[in-house]
Length: 447
Image 1: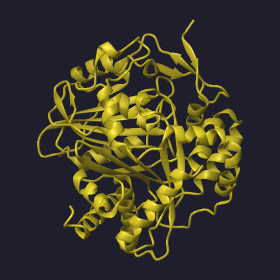
Image 2: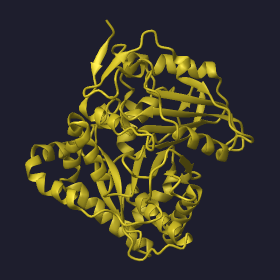
Image 3: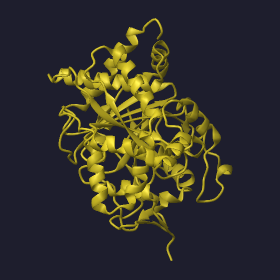
Image 4: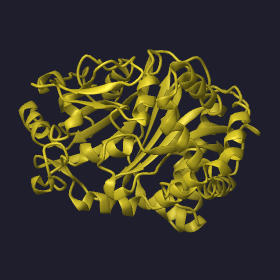
């Protein structure tokens, strides 16, 4: 008899959100400072990734009311780690094109729903390196857990002595510590979520407010979703500069980056000749509710909050002040607990109820915006320095825009994932770079 496991309700919820126009695929890009051979990469994944049994399991019947995981034995790693060749000259623009095409291609459920695409020679930083594009279905885990798992294969964080069984690995403690330090102020406190969950009845008012909250206005970021996705990301931004702006304004790193993102959305609209005064749109922002010492555990454990972005505010300092105040209010509210409860239970509801809830929540926002703090020092894969990291989470329902912020080794990268609705995602990336430069310049004496 094959080994099977029943899929948890929260994971079923993300499985059911899969659609041709919006595949529920988390995409990550890792680049290295020197070329990596395919054989080396295969060895790393065989020894350090496949100890997680979930990565050797397929979904038995994705359309079932109660889907099950089924162990693939034997497991064919070559099917999941495939070579990828970029168009000449193999630079960042070529990699962005390849990532865009992969984002537009749903994963197969005939086998374990993940795939690694290996670019053996990548010319992204002026010297030869490699690139890895990882595509993993959201039903396996959320972005925080998947980042922990992917990075735990690095030389610094891999320790075979911490693998307590072939199906229950644990990463070395330094990763959890590094992420815990970097993540202060960026995630919800699990105890607070727990207290909110106990008082779910008292959160009925919050649920009613979210349900009857008016939909977002029409902007260049709204539109009909399509299967054609496009991806772009910024050049590295020094994290010290972001922290300096935060110190000068009394804001957290998360607040500064979200404010810069709101300013970038304003700049892009202005460049398109669209009115910006008074415009306010919401971003659906994931809040991690898993204790950071358990961040390696697969599955989905996060809440969503709806953050109003003051796109219509011209003054960057006022925009930052407003965003900080709104984030502080949300953290004190029952909203994370309420949405966490919804995400935990809709996987148990009939399909039509599930889709109605997803559609209802999707109308309340314009974009998904994530901010994941990564390791604070450089990692290595088989002795090769890991240079940069980037990732995108999918946009559920009819959302057509995703903004991702990730910090690593003293640098920040910001990525855009969009449908054809957005005329030029690269222009939005440049708008973020310009917006942060303007924000940093305002506080130049502190940066």
